[in-house]
Amino acid sequence: MDFSSKLLEQAVDEVSQLPGIGKRTALRLVLHLLKQPESQTVQLSEALLNLRKNIKLCENCFNISDTQLCEICANTSRNSEIVCVVEDIRDVMAIENTNQYRGLYHVLGGKISPMDGIGPSQLTIKPLIDKVQAGKVEELIFALSSTLEGDTTNFYIFKQIERLEVKTSTIARGISVGDELEYADEITLGRSITNRIPFENSLKN
Amino acid sequence: MDFSSKLLEQAVDEVSQLPGIGKRTALRLVLHLLKQPESQTVQLSEALLNLRKNIKLCENCFNISDTQLCEICANTSRNSEIVCVVEDIRDVMAIENTNQYRGLYHVLGGKISPMDGIGPSQLTIKPLIDKVQAGKVEELIFALSSTLEGDTTNFYIFKQIERLEVKTSTIARGISVGDELEYADEITLGRSITNRIPFENSLKN
Image (tube, rainbow over the protein chains, first blue to last red):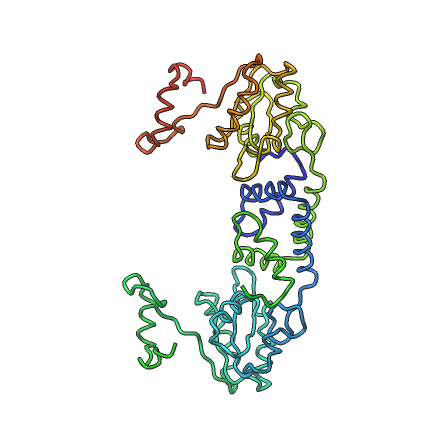
């Protein structure tokens, strides 16, 4: 693309570095900002800078938080002996939305992925193991996405804690509620048959 | 969406005000920035602020430019008596990419659209009429998109200059090069038959 303005080119270049945003989309977004009042651009820039500079992670679960201890960890009515291991804050938000879980979380900050150069040391695995070793955890629920990277990460953590006294579980995989059986993939359908549950249990929620 | 951090919520709110970006996408973009070095966020914010604060419009054609007169208007080898009327800088870039046009442009900055509250006074129509009245323009080429708004804008300008000595033309509508006739819509196909051109002309480029 040939720009008539260096300022415009720089802005488009920066915006197009965001994931899933190409040059054309970036140009559209930037031109939109130019048509809006200057205050919108100022607010956008300041919000991003503010977040990046002042972001904190909860010192217990490593979720994004404005305070030292996040709201969930600070909530004494929650069961601190059950810990759900998730990848990032989006998973915490998704599980919280279900209103089915009253334990705490542990946010890994990613999954082990040699292809992307992410090893165990870049994630918060060490503090998790420490937590388990300190005997503070009764059950660990693995809730990473079931991809190669997710399974690797689960297994890596499992290997380090299997001799400790802690129960481990993983969220159930199966056919989504409302889905037609004929369109489900074989692996999911197979697992949902192998891991079938007593019918009475399915009536609970 | 329920955020555990006000800073995160503000950033997501601001990003999701961009067109075509919802809350989920905004969260994905913001989390991506958090994983990158701080410098990337700083550069992005500065590029946007810089552009918004220092942006200039070419005083002749109103295209986005870093200088008083844009490169195209300042180029003396171009024919300043032919003016192509376009909506915004993206159209200028698209036409420039064809390498088929050696005249100048006039960037309206939008189309007349009462639904969006955009009237003729918000666009650069007055300076265009002035240019034509001053006798500086020999031919005016309308190159707005052929929507209701585009056609309205064309007609509005045409009505104001029809008694002046200026040739007006509009870009050809027809079947795209490489397209199958059977899939073309009737209006486009109809126009391309009505406005057929001598076969020799089609051999030129």
